[in-house]
Amino acid sequence: MDKNKRLPTVKQLEIYELIHPDFGDMTVEEAAKELGITIRAAYRRIERMRERNPAAFRFEEFIKKEEEYINSIENIYAGYKTIAAKRGLEFMISLEDMVEIIQLECSVCGQHPSRANREHPKIAYNDKTGYKFPYNHLWRYDVTKGYTYINCVPMCSKCIERRRDNARRGI
Image (cartoon, rainbow, N blue to C red; front, side, top):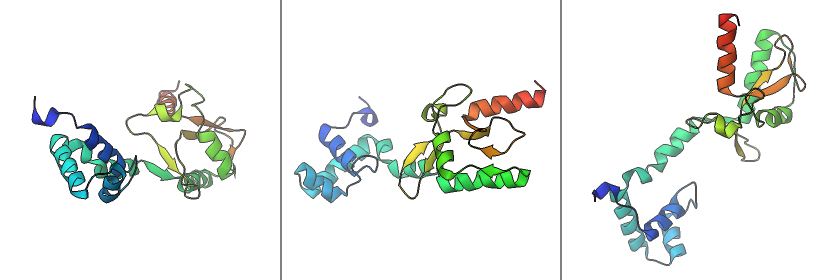
């Protein structure tokens, strides 16, 4: 069997899950104490796992890559407000209403925000609550009117692109 294709042991996976930010987010010392092994043994197991599965320990890169797609909910809100001001449209929707709408399924295809773009999902982050959630775009049902609770609907990126392509073609 190829050295890089070997599966990690159960203990290695336990340590990995304890120190990985998406799981336990502990230090190696805390993980060793949790598992009842010495710190030296924990480091040895991690090093062996790193040799066997180097990709598994690239979670620092994953976190950095994931953060590229995370947007502050306040920034998203400010962006829509700016667009409305540039276009001379009224903006009568609260931050809470916008958050409620963009978490709903796409109004055209029914796609849930978490499933809309699996490669690079759009993730919003609420600084006040620490809550992360996938979101769809805020779309105006009637484009001649402004941003009001009644006129705004959620729409996924794919449906927005389809709608723009159809508008360019005059359909």
